[in-house]
Picture 1 (cartoon, rainbow, N blue to C red):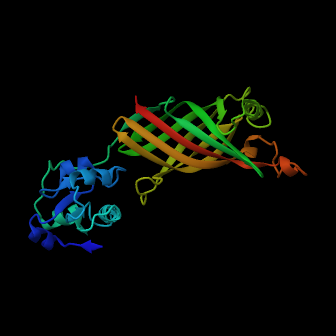
Picture 2: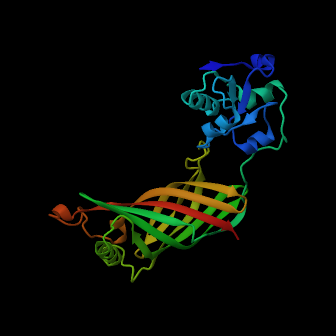
Picture 3: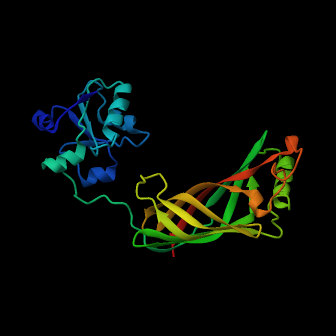
Length: 297
């Protein structure tokens, strides 16, 4: 892969088309003079470049953030694979230009993530819990809805969180036969599993939070420590979570963890509680995937 230094870039004086491969808001903030914008993170990246530079023999110089970011090299690989024959990477990117005082264009507005603050109520219509249950020879998966919850943020840091699950909302997504589907839901609702008639809700209350400072976007940035209540039984629970903001008024939380249902009185098919189960064994652990959206209240 060909590369170009900042000195060579300055000396070439428009001999190649410069492509800023970061999102349009970053391009609007700061870009090399004369550069065009096609975001490599978008699935239409090649289509957009083809519209802007239809001649695949044209010399191109691609650049992005610089440093360890793979944006420019990824763009060059995609363009070469698409048939562009003269693609060069400026690895220093915007970071080196700013360090060296290279002239840049744009509004100069800093690109920074939203900084939410205050109390946020869970949007129950947009939030969802996905569950997976397994046996030795099969598995089923489905959904549960939330009936409430809240998140508190102070000084840009998560302080507390809680949510309530509507156990009456339990649904199975993989069984297409309506009779078998209904039979499974009845089974999950009865005392063998979740005793929904007696315990219509489950819930989690976060009692303290541990920030994870070494995280990167898209990986857990907090560990939540608290108590989960299911079938009227409360047990301690800690799990990693991703808490992110779409804007200053909306938060999203994601987490995945496993629960041992037998700790909450769900004994059906448990190999540690019954002998000679054979094909009737049901795994003790249930996998849960939470996706929670919350709005500032």
